[in-house]
Length: 492
View 1 (cartoon, one colour):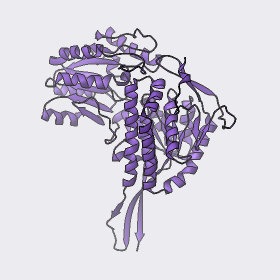
View 2 (cartoon, helix red, strand yellow; view 1 turned 120 degrees about the vertical axis):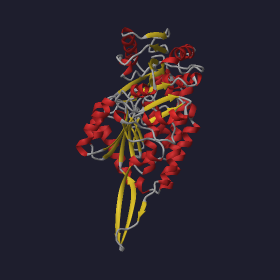
View 3 (cartoon, one colour; view 1 turned 45 degrees about the vertical axis):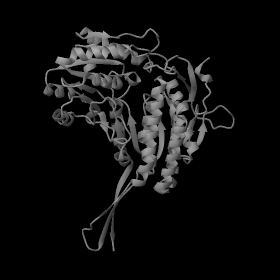
View 4 (cartoon, rainbow, N blue to C red; view 1 turned 90 degrees about the vertical axis):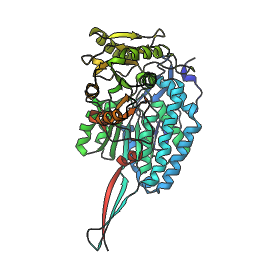
C-alpha cells in the first residue's frame, strides 16, 4: 500500500488562493494553469500525494488576492486579528498528531521530532497573536509649542514568504504569524519537496476563520519563475526568505530594482566549542541534540566541533558511544532517532565531505557510510583530526556528520570559530563564569548557546550576522520587519 492511501483530513493536493482550493480535478473546483508534481516519502520512495504545480498566472492571481484582502485585513483592530491568530494556534494544537504525520511523510524526520515541530510552530502563532496588541507607537515631546509629534507603525503590505523543506511548519509560522499580526497579507511559496505541510496549515487557518486572500499557499516547482514574479511585482512589498546564501544574494539583487523590503535567514556553519573545563557528559548530550536532530539538516546545527586538545580524545570517545546508539529508520516508527536525508543529492554531499576529509588526514571514529537500510539513509558519523584545509570546515554539510577539530587556547578557539562568512549560530561549553562573558561577546554570531545544544524559542530573536542574513524572527523584534514607521506632525 502506498502512502497516497493515508487517511488524513488535513491532506490537500490543491493550491489555496483567495480562500479557494484550486487545482483539483473535480468539476466544482477551479483549475490551475499547469500540472501536478509527485511528493514522495523519502523513507520509502512511496507516493504521498500529487500536488498542484502552479505557473506564473496562478502566482499573479495569488498576489492579486492578497492585494485585495490587504485593506480590509489591516483595518481590523489588533485585538480582532489576535483572536483569529489564536484560533489558528488552537487548531494546530488540536491537530498536532495529524499535522506531524504529514511532516514525517513528506520530509522524513522522526514523528517525535515532527510533533515537536508542530508545537514549536504553534508557539509562534500564539506569541504573535499577543504581539499584535502590543505594536506600540510613540508620542514624542514636540520641537515647537504648537506642534504635536506622533510615530506609528503600519503594515508594509503584501508579504511573500519563501520557505525551506527542513522545517516546513515552523518556517511558515515564523514568517506568516508576525506578518498577519502586523496587518499584512501573505503569499506563501513552500519548498517543492514539502508543500503538503503548508497546505495543511492553510486548512487549519481556514477553519480558524482567517479571511479569504489573507493567507495564500502557492506550491510550484519553478522556483526561478516564482522568484522573478515575487521580486518583480510591485504589489509585493516584502519578501521573507529562508534558504541558501547563494539564493539569498540573488533575491537581494532582484529586490534592488524596486527597493523591496527583504528579510533573509541564510546558511550557517555553526561552531561547537568545548573547553577543557567543560562538563564533557553535558557537552556530548548537547552535541547530539544539536548535530543529529533532523539528521543534521538544520541551519543552526553544529557543523564544526572545536575541542580543547586535552579533552578531544575523551570527547570523541564519549560522543561516538552516543552516536552509535542512535536508531536510524522510517520516521513513522516510534523509537527512531534519525530518519533519511531529504534526497540523493544530500547524501552525495555528505559523502563528498567525508571523503575529502579522510583524504586529507581525518580519521573515521564511527559511521561514514550509507546505512544498510538503503535509500537516502546515512549512518550517524563522527570524524576526528579534522583541520581547516578540509571542505567540511568551511562548507555547511547539512547531514549527520560531527567533525572534530582541536585548539590549544581560548584565543585560537575564537579565531577558528569566527573563521567563516557565516554567522547564524554558535555553541560553547565552559563552567567558567569569566570565560562565559569573554567568549559569548567574542563570537560573531546572531545566536549563541552556552552549555546547551538547543537554542530555538519563540521568545528570542532568531537570525544571523555576516552572510547568514538580515532581520530577526521571533520575540518582540520579529514583528517589526513587517511594519513601516510613520511620523505624523500635527499643528494645533
